[in-house]
Amino acid sequence: MILWSVLAVGSTVLTSRTAEAGFCGVGCCTPCVTSCNFVEHCTTMTKTCRRLVWEPQEVTRLKTVFEKKPVVQKISYCRYVPEVRTKEVRYTVCCPVWETKSKTITYDVCRPVWEIRTKQVPCTVLRPSYELKTRTWTECKPVYETHSRDITYTVCRPQWETRQHAYTVNTVEYEIRTKQVPYTVCRAVPEQKTVAYTDYERVVETKCRQIPYTVCRPQWETRQMKYTVQKPVHEVHCTEVPYTRYKPVLTAKTVEYQSGHWERQAYQVSGPVIYRHVAVADPCTPAAESAAVEGETVETVDCAACGPSRRKCRVVKVQCPPVTCYRKVWVPEIRTKNVHCISHVPVECTRTVHHCTTKYVPVEKTCTYRVCKMIPETRVKDCVYKECRMVPVQKTRTYTTVKYVPEEHVKTVCYRVSKIVPVQKVCTYRVCKMVPEQRTKTCFYKVCKMVPVERTCTYRVCRMVPETHVQTIKYRVCHRVVEQHSRVVSYRTCRMVPEERVRLCKYTVLNPVVCEGTVVSCRLEAKKVPVTEIRRVPKIVTFEIPVEVYSCRRRTCG
Image 1 (tube, rainbow, N blue to C red):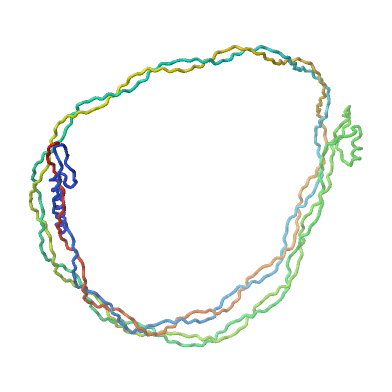
Image 2 (tube, rainbow, N blue to C red):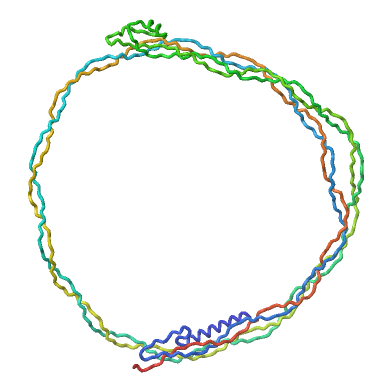
């Protein structure tokens, strides 16, 4: 059915295109070419077209619908109720017990031992030696003289001159001319043509076919189920339980512990021995007398160098003052303190414990219920429908066409020609020319002349002469002597003693309780309900549209 509809639409499109090809300017409305011998003429015609349309149609049918209906049943069930109980739990705790002990520690101490030693050290001393020298040199002294001379220079003076220049200018002149130009014109000639085409006619046929479908039919069954219920039986018992309770006892005791404090101790360290060079005021005085006066120690004294300068250097060893230092010293001491201790004394006791024992007895019960089962059934219904078929039909159509015949013509065209004509002109202008002139001026200047002069200078030169001496130096050497010492150290030891205790713990027990209740189940019932559906039916609609046709007619040129 859909195939025939597609063929009908295709034939409609083919027919419209065939009709458009038979006329000049149909569809696109392109006018004929006009000239002096023809005039346009437009004619309006009608054209029949077909179109496929789907129309809605209401159809009523019966539909099976299942409704749910509630069913109430009474049942017995077992529910567990939680109950909180308590019980005694024994556990072991480790209690710390502290003990004071002592031990002897041996350690090494390094004691410093100082030793005085001497050594010979050679040293070199530079002694100054002075000399008188004379130096002669030549200097150039500047002497200035004034001179004059004549300088000749050239100056350019401007001189103006009038000149004329002849030049040629090109002028454009225009001239009008005519010429014969051939051209071609197309003349329209009408012709009659006949075209054969195929058209399709619609043929509607009524048919009937059977459609199978499946329907589910409900079927109810009654079933029984056996189940076992545990029925609780409770019993109460009494029991005498012995237990040990620990009673705390407060005691006091004296404990010795190792302690001490830091003390600040002062000690002196001898100052270092330094060497320095001292200039002797009177070099001929013995070094021992000068040292006794100044309170210093002199290693070497040399009086052989006394000369005209009356100066000499000596090396003096000086002892620096002692330095006071402080250090921290740990002073150990033993102290005592009172400590309060708690000890637990066990006490035997008894108590009565009531406990409940639950025993479950199985009981069989029967439950009846209904089950709905859907059984499929296959049914057949008749469906009447219409089938549209397109039948091809051969047809012919006559139309008029226009044929264009070319014709040769000649026309006169006017045009303009340009020509270049030379013209002579004269231009007057001024020229500036620079004329050189010679001039003279007098210039004064100074001339410097160097005159040599002899000069003499006397100066004093100091030269250091090295001298070697040997001196004895005393120094201290420190070496460590190891000594062993011992001391008693007190320390505390912790020992864990196990101790049993009792505490109450809570736990939950589930007690069964038989209850009765209702259960709501659903039952499906089938019934027929009319349902309206809308479906679309194909229909071919015929309509006419206007078409403009252009034609050309011959006329006489005025």
